[in-house]
Amino acid sequence: MSVHVLIVEDSVLVTDALRTLLEATDHRVTTASGVAAAVASIERDPPDVMLLDLGLGDGNGLLVLERLAAASVACPATIAVTGSDAPEIREACRAAGCVDVLLKPVPSAILRARIAAAAPSRG
Amino acid sequence: MSRATTDESALQQRVAALEAQLHEQSRQTSELKNQDALKTQFLANISHDLRTPLTAVITHAEILRDGILGPISDRQRESIVGIIGGGRQLLEMVGEILTYARGAANQLSLSRSQFAVEAVIDQVCEMSESLVARKEHSLTVDLRRGLPRLYADREKLTHVLSNLLGNAIDFTPPGGRVWIAARLADSTERGGGGGQAVLFEVGDSGIGIAPEHHEFVFREFAQVDASSSRIHHGTGLGLAITRKFVELHDGRIWVESVVHAGSRFFFTIPVRPAPEG
View (cartoon, rainbow over the protein chains, first blue to last red):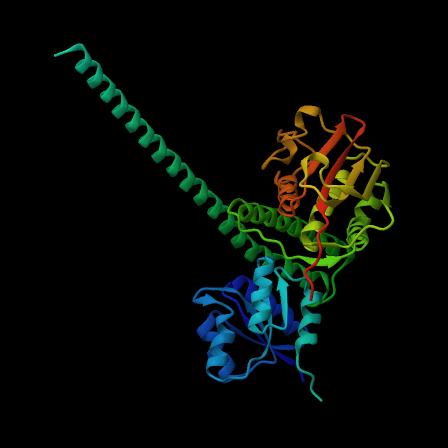
């Protein structure tokens, strides 16, 4: 069974590139372009892994995790994908519960490996 | 009207004029500072925004290169590898501008951990392996025994060494020598604050730098050869960022160089104990 990945990203260009990569490598992909849309998508169709951009149009991506916690909705394994390698951003992602933090642009092979590592194993 | 009263009135007028001038200069300084801050913010924003389309370009190119959408010929692969290489180089330059902008706004901080100097130097040499091989340079490493572990920002130190080694390779003709050395030194050398420091040296037998440019190369946007036909391209921020990273550690950086004989870049990273627990 393929891994379900939710791409949370406000750039259509980047979303399309990631969708092409992941769908062609046997992942099921859903997308959301903002914080509210991501929360709604997770409630409706929980993914195995969420790729979370931090700079979203309607707020910081980490707000998605905060809102899920407030609504007592289970949080998917989350990989933050950020344009900044500042240590404080990395630390904030870890503190918010991200299992991994990757710097854009993530080489495609590394992205697939990290998604596989983050996806909950299906026994 | 007495002479004294006239003098006093003239003096008051002069003081008022000077005060007005001072006020105007202060206003202009404040405006220039605001404009400078705006420019820095613009640089940070544009650098960040440039990463997004570049990410899409590189990801699509990697999908094609890896044959994920179907097989490609060797010549097509070569061309796609060129797109990825160009994209990544552009991305590095954008990253440099972003780092510079954050440094100018005093938004850079250190993320310290404890590590061995040898590990960082090995990592940097490994990263430069293909460049060294391409230019048929001999790369040597001279590490003195018993170097203490550093409690510093490993990522930034790696950046400093990579930048200096990259420059050494870039500015040395094929077949030349490049080297990295590290030893324990007194950090009072070159005006340090005292105590022990690790003194790093990155050297080459390359084209060298004229004495009048020894300070200039560390300035933002500095290019010793500023002509549009220059061989070595870049943002001109590499050494300025390198100096910033060294100074964030309370270290010092300097260069000794002779034109046509080579350059030796030195920097210190003070040794400090890691917090307990």
